[in-house]
Image (cartoon, rainbow, N blue to C red):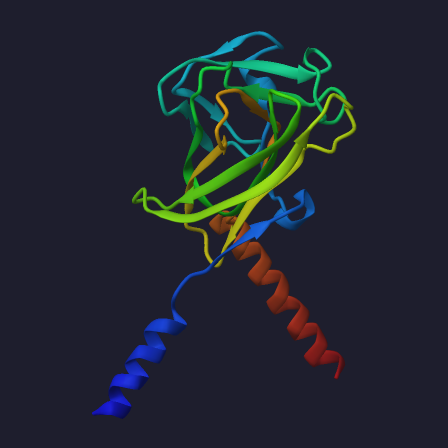
Length: 212
């Protein structure tokens, strides 16, 4: 009985999902992205609850937890921070609202750079939720807010063992004003893409067998 119980525990533990923090955009392995220019030019307001689309056409909604409007800004055009020159940004407009991105299609990984509106050290926070709005990841990272425009804004990202991330949350601890740049996503391939990949692999295996 003890052996069976141990085996059952091992099987359950082996299926537990894990999430890891990402520290650089290259770690996302992006297959999709969110470009904030779809919501207009710098200084245009973005209503909480606005619907947009990723570069691959997947729908998402961006909200603040207090329903306050956000604003579009660009590095060096309405935002004198340390993002890359010209980077399109989404600012919570000093409303104090936590910025939330709700995805129609779950992803495996995501991330963006973030900067506090006030120069100096700060702590950025990124959270991930599954489709049932269960918190599955909560990570922080120290950053330094400057006006250098040198792409040194701190990166916050999350990776999961499976495509179960449906809600992305960005914030700065103790701050009511901050911005993020474009969000990179690792999305699940469409069924047709997966089928094409499978056919390609099968063909490669057949060719290898013929040659051998």
